[in-house]
Amino acid sequence: MSFAAHGLPTGLMLDGRAGKITGSVTQLGKYKAHITAANAHGTASRDLEIVVGNTMALAPALGWDPYNAFAIHVTQDTIRTQATAFVESDLINHGFTYINIDDTWAQNPGSNDPYLDGSGRDVNGNLLPNCNFSNITGLIDYVHSLGLKVGIYLSPGPLTCQSLIASYKHELQDATLIAKWGIDYLKYDYCSYLEIKPNSSVDSRKYPYKLMGTFLESQPRDIYYALSEYGLSEVQKWGASVHGNS
Image (tube, rainbow, N blue to C red; front, side):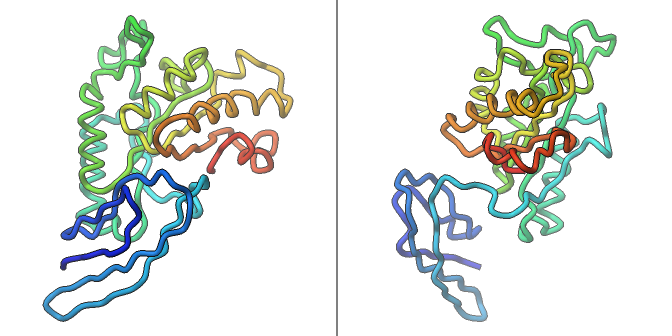
């Protein structure tokens, strides 16, 4: 199968073999392109409307998260294997896009587990992956090379649900770091924030999500923002107002 496109907006390109459109468009608006696919049986063409705007996640995200299957035992090899399976099983061509890394990718200072132990952050304050994710940027590049997207996990409190280093007082730095790595999806899990702000008011629950949401919006890439807030304080009513996508 081969593909061709005419009229793509400036900044986008088509992989004629894979049929994948990639790139970045700076001007908001609607664009019409003409797409042709051909193989030994003939050709087919259609017009494709591309809308560039500020709204993400027009449909629910489809993909895979390791936590229920692997919990704290997930590794970068687990993620690579699952990403490969999405391609080999053809799920990639049915809307399944995200391969996510859940809790336990970071470090837990003082842990008895040699794979999780570490300082948590480097001398500049950047998060450090644990030994199970010794090449996290290489892993992200591999998943992207398959045409899939990558998700990761953080928490607004000082620790994640599994007591690893989280984003409290490092929100902008962490948002900037994961954007630099190429992350496409963030699961932000409430967990230990209750220890910082035991007040259960709606405004108290909204604050950390709005803070991270604002910093994600300022990054030079789209990052899907999933609010793991357990349905408390009717998050469905205010999640979109803090830049949440689901």
